Each structure stands twice: as C-alpha cells, then as structure tokens.
Length: 447
Image 1 (tube, helix red, strand yellow):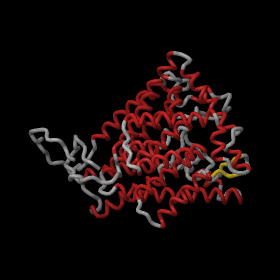
Image 2 (tube, rainbow, N blue to C red; image 1 turned 60 degrees about the horizontal axis):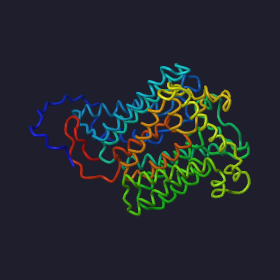
Image 3 (spheres, helix red, strand yellow; image 1 turned 30 degrees about the vertical axis):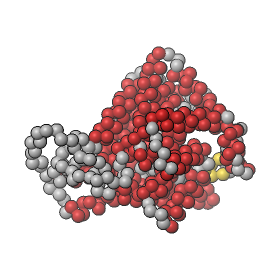
Image 4 (cartoon, one colour; image 1 turned 60 degrees about the vertical axis):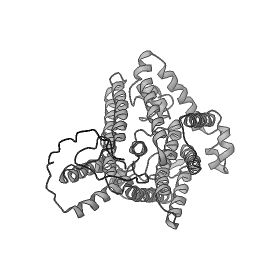
C-alpha cells in the first residue's frame, strides 16, 4: 500500500546532503546498536547520573535519547532526508499532543506551579523523544530484529539488577558511597522479611510490567527455540518475584488476549466494548473484594499475606480512589482542569505523609483529579483507540490498560513506546513496503 494518486505529480527538488563522517556501512550498525541499547535502558530508574543531587533523576533514557535523535537526524540528512513518516504516526502525535496540552493547562492553576511545571516539562520531553526515536526505528529496514534484540538485552539487564539486589540483601551494601548514589541497587522488601526484586525499576509494580513488556516482545518476535523458552521462564520468574499484584494481573490479561488472538476471533467495536466492560468489572471486583484475588493467588506464609484481604495496600487503593473522585468533583475548576499535574501529594498528605510522589494509584483517576475531566476522557480515548488499532500488540495494550487501572505508568517511556508501536504498527509482521522517497510520504508507507 503506497501513497494515493493525487493527480499531478509534485515537483521534486534536489535535497541537500550533509557530509558523512564515516561510510554508510559503518553508520548503519552504529545506529542499530544505539537503538538496541536505548530499548534495553528504556525505563531503567535505578541509575541517576546526577547522583541524587539534581532537580530530577537523570536516567540513561534522558542521556542516550538526545544522542540517538541527533545520530538519526544526521543519518537522514546525509542521505538527502529520505524519511518515511506513516500517516498513523501523525495522527498519534496529534492526539497525544492534545493530551499534553491539557496537562500543561492544568499546571497554571496548580497548588505548586514550580513542581507541576517541572514534571509536565519532563513528561513532554520524554513523550517527544520516544516519538522521534520511534520514527527512527520505523525507518530501519528490520525493526522486528531491533525490537527483539532490545527485548533480550532489557530482560538480561532486569535479571542482573535483580541478582544484584539478592546479593545486597544477603551481604549488605556494595561499592563506595559515590557509586551507590549513582547506581541504586538497594532491594525493596515486604514486611522487612521478603525481598521484592524490582529489576531495573525502583517500583516493584512497574518493574514487573517492564519485564512483561520485554517477555511479550520475545514471545511475539522470536521463533520457538530453547533460548526463547528460557527467556520466557526467566521473565515469568522475575514477574513473580516482584510480588506485584498489578504486574500479575497485567500478565494474566496479556495471556488471555494472546489466547484470543490465537483463536482468530474478530475484535469488532461491540466485542471491544464488551471485553473492556468485563475487564473493568473484574478489576473493580478485585479492588473492592480482595478476597476474590486471595482465593486465586493465595500462597503459603508471608507471601500469601501479600495477596490477602487484610493486606494494607489493597484497602489503600480503594481509599485513594475515593479521594480522587472527591478531589475531582470538589469544584467546577477541579472538574475542568484539576488541581495541577503532579500535585496529588498535596491532597494525600494524610495517607502518604511527607511522600513527594504520593498519587492516586490509577492513571485515569490521577488525570481526572490532577488535570480534569477532559484530560481523563482524552486519555481513555487514546488507550481505547490504540487497543482497536493494535493488531498483534493488542494483548500488550490490554495488559497496559489493566495495569494502569491500579497503577500509573505515564511517567515511564515504556508506556509511550507501547502506544506508539501499537498505534502505528512498528515492528509488526512486515507488509510489502515500497522504497521511500525524498521527504515525507503524506499517505504513510506501510511498515
């Protein structure tokens, strides 16, 4: 499928080429290795190159992404700007930009303008960096290979971080203090007895979802082999060791939708609505009646307590959900623009005293309370539209939606990469692709 025939062919101009510092046969592997490294380090939150002394956490994503964007632009310029921008990518960017605009508008009436402004600025930078690098990935001849290698590297990195946490749990802190300020390997724990292995993330819940993301890409893109089977087993083990109910729920949803995909069932709009309603109902039952979850995933001893009805965080989810609704409906201003992006902690001090990142434990409730009803509804529409368009990525998008019903991952680059991959179709089974032309293809070439 190529560009439509618009009648008179547009006049073509000779595009300027920038001189290359190295032959093309060397540029291509360098760019590919950068993309693989970027995918592996996508949501590594345990490394702060500022050592905890900066106004924000300077993660590998924020260091590598500008370098990768500059490298991709230089390569594109050196080839006369031969760039392919799918029409679906432009649509995605339009809707996500509208959402970011609503989040930005909420900051001007926030409780704490500096905090809100800093956090929304970081989010904007993050979203657009992911988009630009996603387009660089889409313009590679074999994005599937790069995604697969990045997934293997990312899963291996999560395993290494988890093993380091086990060692530190047993032996105590490792390395000099300066190193520990930059690379945080301190394990999280449950009841100060059981370590929760979070992988490359600080948060056990998102650490589990990040492993699920990499594992899904390996399942989707790799051929059956002993290495693939071993990687899947490692992924499932790491998800379990996070002791995260949100990650386990996301994994179960992903598994269910993968079975649906294998059955070749058509996902029409009514089916999508029905499945979404069932998912929302089951998820609400888990939150409001935690004994249901307990009867399914109960295990012995202290691990069993993690999934029990008496477990504190289960009840806490219900409390913060009610608080989000109260905050969002407190006034017309709150209903329209919320209390300001990133300002949830100011209305949750009684529940999370002194916690800088206190939140409502749900992406959609957080957007409703912090940025207003239009922002929340637009986010729901973006997720729903992505689910409909997702194709082979539909199980992963369904898992992402389930996860964000009880957690919030919008500050993680992985969420925006998943939405972009699914919306545009980057890395899916390749269709017949026509050679790119100079400049942008207004109709979008298939990927």
